[in-house]
Length: 238
Image (cartoon, rainbow, N blue to C red; front, side, top):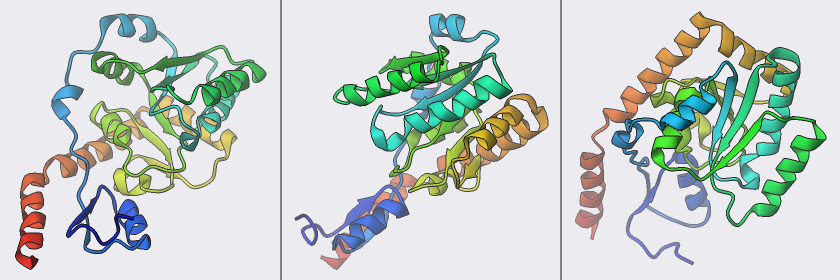
């Protein structure tokens, strides 16, 4: 219904821009989400650090508890990692499940079915606790099948947390050549890869270094200038 109404249409990724164009939108441009890096630098919560900064290898995912995030796939990958690769490990999910309680309870049922006890659903948390979870974790695992941008990928890179993500929707675009992408959800192979990321210091350092370069490219863009230019083009056409 909105197609054709506005002079300028901004999407936060090429993936989203194409979806808009398929719906009939014209003059569609890409303008990335603006991330407040000052919030990511807030001191991490000490209680979370004390509780989760132990000898466990923490596998983290941040995002709303909704079906498109495919948390059930993340739990299955973690099952193989915990059972066959690293018994001293824990899966942590941070994100609201308000309005999707049925999906949340299905995830709890799956964890019980797989006899997994090292699962922690933190729910929605303040920024200091979120920063602490990033700080305490070893790997960011994303199995989501639909992301328009995926800010937690950038946040993980900021916190020097290696990203292992399913290559779907806008995730490859957001990662921009950094981290590790996979195209098949082979849980056994993913478990082995998580083991390498957790143990191989050289591999981990190489991944983190490439991710820091991606962060630099993201931060060095003149977003204010780009936005003014986009508005200026629209105004001049008018």
